[in-house]
Image 1 (cartoon, rainbow, N blue to C red):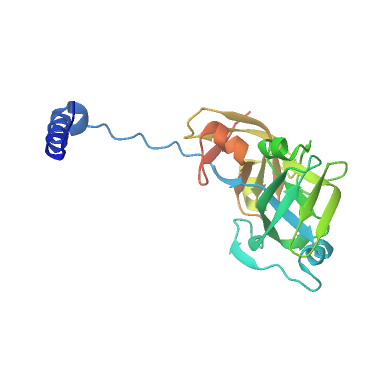
Image 2: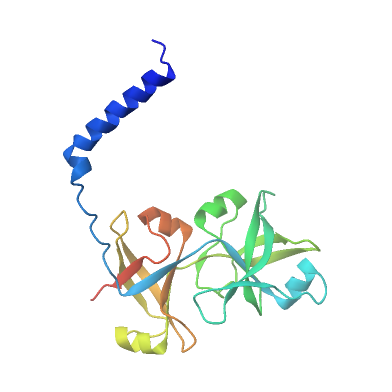
Amino acid sequence: MDYNASTVAEMVKRVLAELDKSPAATAAPAAAPAAEGDIPVGISNRHIHLSKQDVETLFGAGYELTPLKDLSQPGQYACKETLTLIGPSMRSIENVRVLGPVRSASQVEISRTDSFTLKVKPPVRESGSIAGSAPVIIVGPKGVVSLKEGCIIANRHIHMHTDDAAKFGVRDGEYIDVDVCGGERRTRWFDVQVRVSPKFALEMHVDTDDANAVGIGNGARVSVVKK
């Protein structure tokens, strides 16, 4: 059957009228509020930390990173600069964000999904623990850095100020369990490392794989499991 414009318009009007009469349309139940946890969650996408020497190799002598926006942890910031990662198979991931400030050694943090793209085998590690980790190549506008080690998958961890650690009764380096609150899939994360410093702000960090698996975004919350 052929439908002209007036016929289609009349059909749409009839459908909308029927929907207005339906109980679901007139009395939709309010969505349940998301459960509240003790600790906010920040989701870390793939990123790169650079040493001063590697900044100059990649961008040129005397180059300084350009802060773009502050991150949740005091003194940490996302930079305007992005770089390309290349794995042993020569497959690449472009536009990977650099984070500042500079560090004593360069480090690349990716997800397990990213590792399949790059064909690398990074270990799950605490940030800064790069000895024996995976190699990766970093390509910049002025040069290339070939890291023999430095590519990791960051472990699940919680940054805590010393006051927060006292509140929760935990110590730096301790491992705890947390429940994810309000996600699409009820989940408990085990062996989450606690990192304590007077310079830290309270926040749990997970990567995009973990966040996508349970259906949460930035600002979700977790609760410490009492043992």
